[in-house]
Each structure stands twice: as structure tokens, then as C-alpha cells.
Amino acid sequence: MQYLKSSVLLLPLLLCSTVHANELDAITDSQQLTKAAQDHEQYGISSVGPVAYGTVLSSGAKYAGSANWSSSYNATYTRYEISITGENYYYLSYATVITPAGDQRYCKSNSVSGKLLVECYDNNGNKATSRFGFVSFKP
Image (tube, rainbow, N blue to C red; front, side, top):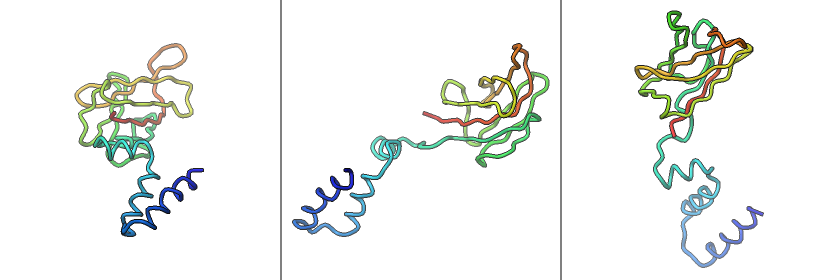
């Protein structure tokens, strides 16, 4: 149905107007934009995708992900510390999802000194190491 609407709208435009081909491309392209991309164009939202994402090994080493972050394990505080290049991370200013990977754990996020903190716990509520994945958005 969407194709039919586009065709019906463009046909009179082609017949009754001196619209150039590149303008027609812009019209059809704008109809194909996702909601996030439309918001970006309309409201100037700077971030359409995640600020950072990836997976971390239980040792704190980065396993995979976007190139703009690094991680380490802080044994003193039993937590993972993730630095995101160009971001002064404050946990209430970001939407971050953390998913334990292969371990029966639950993890939470926090922040200190501009870093994303990840603390994981075992089923008894004790702090524990874990492998995990994360994705962080800045709304």
C-alpha cells in the first residue's frame, strides 16, 4: 500500500511540474527514513545510534565493540570501569543496558568521575565477576 501511495503522489508531480530528478530522489528518500532519522532531520538530534557498545570479559578486558571505549576491572571496588571517548558519563544522562553473557548474574550501572561503572552480583547477592555486553544511548 505504501508503494501505491508514493506512486499516486509522484505521478501528478511528474506530469505537472518541472521538478528535477535529484529533487524526486530527495522526496522518495525522505519517505524511507526511519523515525529516528526523521527526528534527527526535524529536531537536530545529534545521536541516532548508540554512543558505545560492546562485550567485556570477566577480567575486565574489552572483547569486542565500538572503537570509542576501553574497560578495566577494579578489584578494590569489585566493579568494571568503562571510559567512553568524548563522553563525561553520568548514569542518569544515558540509557544503558547491561546483559550478563554466559554467567548467572545480574548487573547494574552507575558512574563516577565520568566513567560508566558496572557491578555484577551472583544469585545470592554477592558481588561477582562476569562477562557482559552493554549498549549505551544518550537520549
